[in-house]
Image (cartoon, rainbow, N blue to C red; front, side, top):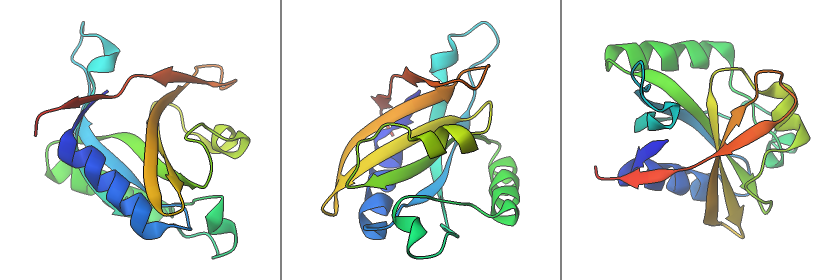
Length: 146
């Protein structure tokens, strides 16, 4: 996935502000065109979401209410884009999918995870759910110009 520098920085900033809780949101962009490498998905904008989990469980889990997901889809449409990824942070935990992430993942979307250590955003990783839902495959993040 190709992300503009400002998109990646907006996600990292959201993750830092939300610490010690998980931040979550949507990456809006353009899918690869037919015949293009699927990795050519472009992330062009960010919509922050509200983590609707209770305060204690939101330190290790995130949830986005269906109405907010729908609003994100409508906003993406208004911008002529689509939701190309869902992002969330892992406070004081590696930027790798958890078992809960695997159980709750939706097909089609990519998942960007940012590790936040002691309030400072660190590594960002990108994942795509395999078709059989058995695991995630790691994908590259390429930072492009704004």
